[in-house]
Length: 248
Image (cartoon, one colour):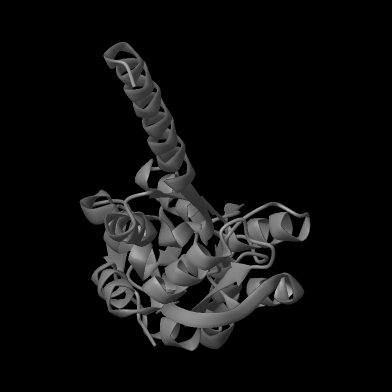
């Protein structure tokens, strides 16, 4: 082959190789979509970062909302890879649409008040008084737990607002729009000194169990299974415990 022809052939080969490398890189970029209860925000953000560190070509995309809302979206056919619910009831609603839910965390309620506790609240019974109290709506897990602890304590609550997820309850207390709110221990911990936490013994009567499952027809079924195992494994337990969750 003449030198000039060799040069042209070499250039063409290089272009082909570069195109192949580019295509391979594009193919390696994968997105894992995880629908998770709002109370998992801080812990799953950290979990996703650790998962990505072990799978550099994978981007974990989270959507945090109330478990009831997410379950309804799955029923309506929303594409997703993993569903993590804050209770077993909402996971049961999509039983035929997910594979093998497994328990991975537990959580319980606590009272949060603004710093300095201006309303002087010290117990669950105090929430039945003339205070502006915010709780979760009954159809979401934290609201269901609220009803159970109130019933166990014989306390009749008259909230000024019922929110669709626990973060909304927390935000109203942080914003000074309520004297007190009932949230998960993990949310109170995540809020730091923006709220004051008041534990109460009746919370042990309503410990929520968190299940996680792959979604049937997941765009990334293999990654979905790996993420579920990761959440339930040593790294997941370490992160969840750090954020205040109980683990199986």
